[in-house]
Image (cartoon, rainbow, N blue to C red; front, side, top):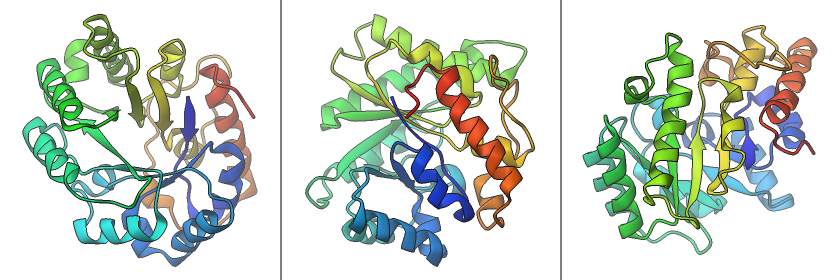
Length: 266
């Protein structure tokens, strides 16, 4: 599993050491020159693997279609997460169909996100995306129906176990095939991913969790991670000044993120 953690500007250079690939949020690319220059430089000089999101999680709606196409043409990310609608399977499938016909630069892979309010919604989404030709599909972390599947008293644990249950059930039902490729969007708790270590379909993860925990003042427990999702949001600290104490916590958390989940630490 390849991992990337969304990071405030002051720590972008350090992120090159703990991120396996770079994760681009288009609204930040347009809004902040420092962020834009980082991706332009990395793209030209190092040609790191880049995944571009559509900023639904941060904005509540996907970013401007026209601007996303322009950024894709400029940066040429390796993967682009096409627009979806939170917990809305019908709209998400409609958007995925629309984007399946939009021509992007050669080498840019489109990734669709399953959405819905039930297991059956997710199954329909997943099957539709495969029929449309998507070869990589993402599962988000925060769907409310996860807590219906796992009625854990700790809702963050419920969401983590709920997503795992959905993916495992879909594999058991042969809805997710042996050669399918999956991206996991975000997480409630960092220790969730250890349960995916033997699921070969899981290809990549993105989450700001270890960074936001550091800004909350928290360090991961070496054996147990966290018991609740960090409260800080990336947009709240995107312009934060460099702080060596915060960096120490970031280094601790990003290291233990991989150790807790038995992901190779480079």
